[in-house]
Length: 425
Ligand code: LLP
Image 1 (cartoon, rainbow, N blue to C red):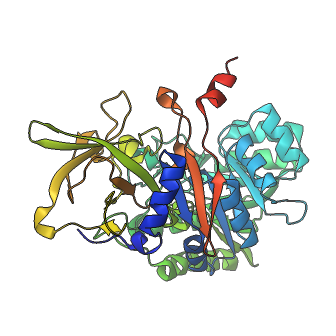
Image 2 (cartoon, rainbow, N blue to C red):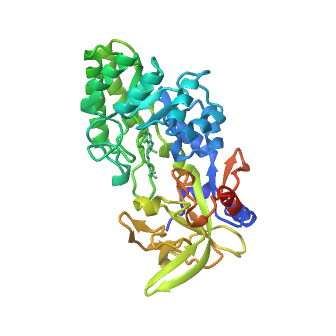
Image 3 (cartoon, rainbow, N blue to C red):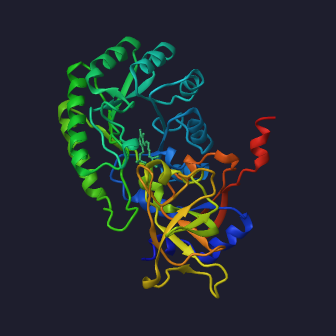
């Protein structure tokens, strides 16, 4: 077992102190890590943060301060972006709304705040065009194929509900004309965890679609490469070569520029890449037991907090901090004493296991001896951690903290059960 890189970001004694104040699990992010990740993508003209990965207002404020634009996929995410200081009145491309459907109140909101809509269905184009002729739009195209780290994160092809089918592009363009909608760009996001093979195909598909736009007498100002850039969750996972990623897209952009005869803005729309490695989930061990030969360690965080292992079989590296040690520090244990361990949560549901593969196959992880009252940390949980949490089993959402410039601040208080009950009174 190797010390995870994140153990350098967070002092074990500080994590323990916060836990003992909170008396419950919590998320903590290192904001400088987010800034480092942003730097790696500066070659793109626009970095647009897919805030669904981590929509805390303080994260959004950081993104805004770093001149990172933002993608919103719901009315709530638009309101978050506005609250964090984003404004399309101040900067036209600040917020883009991406969705396959839109309801009345969201329509009114995007119109009021001049937010371009990245349309994912023909119906949406009609609804927007009827209410707001002239509105700026992107077309999210499903190129007919996709790829993801799991079937559930593949957002292209015939099994995906996302985007406008590539063969319907001409139909979409006709509607743009009919409603005088202003085409800003073409967008493709084929899934989370895109590999180079598919990346090349998306670039080619983008060029082909841009040609159709031109031949139908339309023009476009920008293309979006979508998100999907992964991070190494476990040893041996590849680290994305962002230079190469940019080069592939830049080549596609240049081909499109030659076809159109003018400059085209190149956007990228990552979620995970910017925030995953900034965050951890800190929990405490409340029970250990053997089920036959399987050692179980039960912590007080559940899949209502970190849903990724139960939902996709995702791997999150795990570290232990021993309680009551002379000096509170990350505990690697002795390489010869590592024990195959199943890590599970408190929910009344068998799938509440953090060490499992896609399809629910329980796995044992080699961990140092872990006992009741030790702290157990899930790594690389800054993306799709807190933002996917739920109140299942009537469990309140837990707190979020951030370390910024050496200062630790609470960036979301935990819910109380009363908060939940209050909604039903
Ligand atoms: N753009 C669009 C239109 C998207 O739908 C998504 C993710 C992104 C960008 C950002 O993708 P990323 O760069 O984070 O891979 N909950 C799953 C991921 C689902 C993402 C859905 N859409 C997970 O925990 O892995």
